[in-house]
Length: 242
Image 1 (spheres, rainbow, N blue to C red):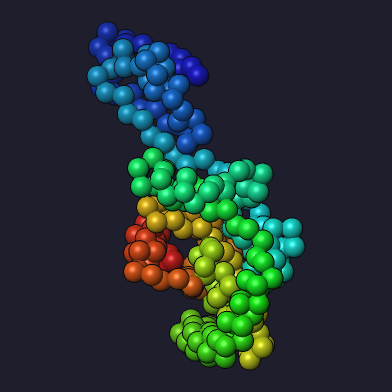
Image 2 (spheres, one colour; image 1 turned 120 degrees about the vertical axis):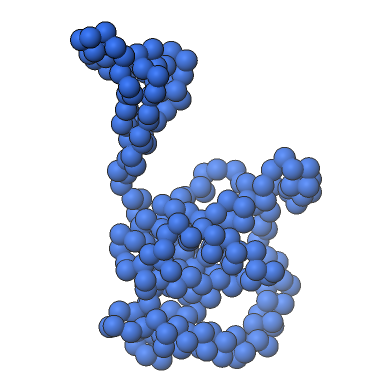
């Protein structure tokens, strides 16, 4: 990294300021190091101003089933990074101790997910049989509301589920719209983490492929509203998604 012809003006007076313009890829620790370019420029002026412009980076392609998901690729595309080769699971005791001691964030690891036993699957099927009609009515009511409020101007709404809890809800909403109205709703899933924010690369992908005004965020677990607040804060710098 070099700068040429940086010397006092012809009358011997120093520059009022030196402005360095670089892209975000070039804004490295070396630029700010004691022997870096900024430090060398500071010897010639009392003010060094650094302007960093965003670098252009290609957007990664969405992931999809059957390789990445049990859902088919048309039912949900995942705006995530594949970390299946990284060891993320940890025993519950280790996770809880690290989180309680402040040494780790809950999103930095996952609980060990065992294959469900036959008894567990029977219990799941029993619970599904008992609640299927109620869930269907709820999914229908939500989907019809979204279609009524956001389905104008000839453009279908774009469902964006908050992984993971929102994804099955988004899939069911997409199935309802297709079965009842013959409308295929685009459906994607992205990551948002309490205390960490939303995946801004995923937002860039959405803005590049859809009208942000058509996006409807879907979640399946509201709890005490922590993720709702996180989503509102994360989208504040992106009013195009309002």
